[in-house]
Length: 350
Image 1 (cartoon, helix red, strand yellow):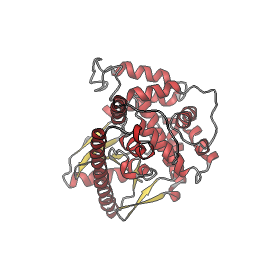
Image 2 (cartoon, helix red, strand yellow):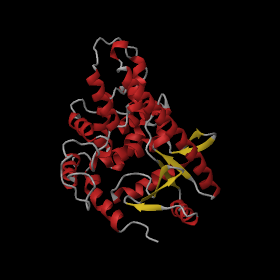
Image 3 (tube, rainbow, N blue to C red):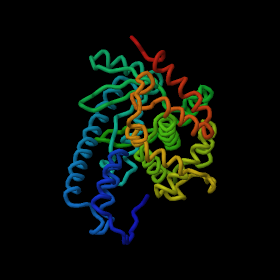
Image 4 (cartoon, one colour):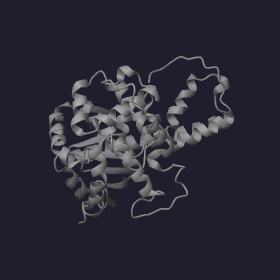
């Protein structure tokens, strides 16, 4: 994951670059590929016209990130003045681990609030006439200054009810070890490193159990490990994964990060079995793209809106349930139950 000096002899054709750009967009890793240009020889670079398109796209990504940072600082101050304790999840907190943070393709702003902060923040939105929608997964979302924002009741995407008591204790245990990230001269709260890894990797698993996820989220995990592996308690982190019920899947993730994304093995906190087969999971990631939107295997399939707006929703869910059950059985079993509950019963409706 660091800077490597290599002398490459192969040539990438214009057709190759068009394909690379297509997949870079599908997996929202345009910035990572763009930053690789500095390491390529002249005959390997994209055609000039494509480089210009790419540069324009990077300018858009940078501007959007700058705007997002302004909104984060603005909202953090507003929520803190209400006496709330907002914590920034994923997104720009992970972007800070990248060599060029502004080149990470951003999604939305994700907030979690300590104690009863979620309800208070929701009341604040209602009071100020900010239109929002309550969504499945115990969350709500809305637009703030042309930037999409989400609030989450649940800190971790771990759905097994048997893990909730442990996760609450975990959150309290690490309360005094939170990190601070300076954004727009404002000190923004982030989770403690071990919890940040659990939150990011648990989020990846949630989407892989459902309709898939793209390479950007795996890059996020890799950059996190690369940046903070020296500061975390490795044995404790392994116990956290174990007690959260996702350790077997974490081994699979680690192998993909090391053997296919280039993360140094020293950055992995504990060893995985060399005989572990992770190639099938990489194939699933490659096909599905960002949150499953680009899976060509199902693009002509039937859409059943009651299940999902994606083609062949039931078939895809069943396929992923079967694949991941052996690695995290409780999460697979409770995913549908909890998701259905939160979608039809668990939403706030006042």
